[in-house]
View: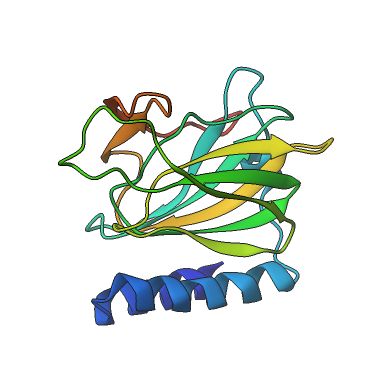
Length: 184
């Protein structure tokens, strides 16, 4: 993980284009997941109440963050956005991602337009968001918790982000915060 963090730090500090950054980080994350790296067990434990966001690394300047996001069987997120770029890889389990077209600010209060659904499984990596394509919901599917390794262009635990009502397009803003791994 130390090498991965150094690689991402270098990419974030030398590339301005978020599409190029996410492409390169996705390549590095694919390599990490294909290797023999194992997360500490405390970063893979779900909560019975809601999905959890465990911070693994937050850049000192908040330019990017690395998190383990864990959903117990059947848990899901509301439809939301990130307000930054992001790359997600599945470490364990599987998740169903439902994407929506990003609403146009000039057309408020309109139902969101579905843009597809995909099931991501262990070892697979996706660019989950860029600032021009950033609305989705995620659900754990299968019979085991889903553990994702997520990299975002900012401190995702402190960013003010939108929650969307898919039927009306209504937006509410939230800050997700960070969860503490059990025993810490």
